[in-house]
Amino acid sequence: MKKESTQDRIKEVALILFARNGFEGTSLSDIAKGVGIKKPSLYAHYKSKEDLFLGVIHKVSVDYNAFFVKTAERLSNQSPEKQLYDLLRENTEYLRNDEMGLIFKRMMLFPPESLRKEIAQMFEKTENVMKRVIKSILEQMLPNEEWERVFDAYLCLLDGMFEQIFYYSPEEHNKRLENSWTLFIRGVHSKEEK
Amino acid sequence: MKKESTQDRIKEVALILFARNGFEGTSLSDIAKGVGIKKPSLYAHYKSKEDLFLGVIHKVSVDYNAFFVKTAERLSNQSPEKQLYDLLRENTEYLRNDEMGLIFKRMMLFPPESLRKEIAQMFEKTENVMKRVIKSILEQMLPNEEWERVFDAYLCLLDGMFEQIFYYSPEEHNKRLENSWTLFIRGVHSKEEK
DNA sequence: GTCTATAAAAGGATAGAC
DNA sequence: GTCTATCCTTTTATAGAC
Image (tube, rainbow over all chains, first blue to last red; front, side, top):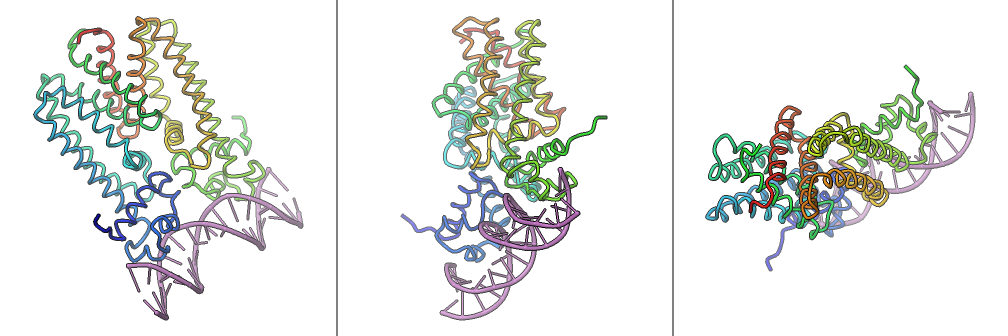
């Protein structure tokens, strides 16, 4: 049980509140109350609300990139198809848990207007990481003229499941993931049928 | 050129601002300024900010339901497969234009905490409308044991393309739609391959 | 680093004249 | 219906004691 710095506590509480209520919907009072300090004390750690917010988002972004790469590496000795399936599952699991998926999604889709550019930059890196990883898996299993199509469909699958996290219970969501995956992989195998 | 009531002007401006900046991120001053009146004048038309917001969302929800049903009806004399494809395309098109998709998405995923229940009710109706329409198309083309799987995959396709509206240019987005659709429909045709 | 006190601005909302 | 004036609350942020 190692003790946590106040800075980390602040980031932790801020993550949860920003995720649930957004940037504008979260006040520094809320955060201070959650941490158990008074509002002005926050300014000993961050120089503004925006500064704190960017700190939180930066951590979210870095953590997610690391998760994605590490997971792909761990799966890399399996068949390409199994890699894709497990990556879909673990990615969904990761984003479903805690406030991670919530804030990730919220900030990618609806960044506060004033920070749009800074946030876009962070997530551009994330996008590139994902592309590189997925592409390298697809290249192991597909002819050249096919991989872009499958890549697009796979990303749509990831995005669709991402979206549905917020609509359905974990059980319902898992069922939908299985069904969507099954149809996807059938489509991959059945080349030039049409 | 028929003249517009101030009420409608307010709703119109509020729609755009709420869509871009969210409920908490939009102030009544912003709306009043956009309309060209003073802030207190808003209260002659709506009794509170929440009231105005719910009015806007209600219209969005009703409009979308009507669009979905009307589009499906218009397509109903085509083959089931063509119906699915055109519905995907037109739905994507509809949500991509104006601020419609933006506010629709924002409110489904991140309603303001205080209005969560009211909004959930509105969109429950939307979900049922979509389910009914899609199910009736799928039943024309699939055996009983298959339709649920295809239904889940089709919804994932809709949701994935919905999500991607915000990441990509219309051209890039259309390319991705084509590729995702192609793989989807291949999967539908290639039954029990695995 | 944390506190109290306080500033300065902006938020939603109401009263009352026109 | 729209305005000015005003109220009350909350917001971000700073100053300065401990």
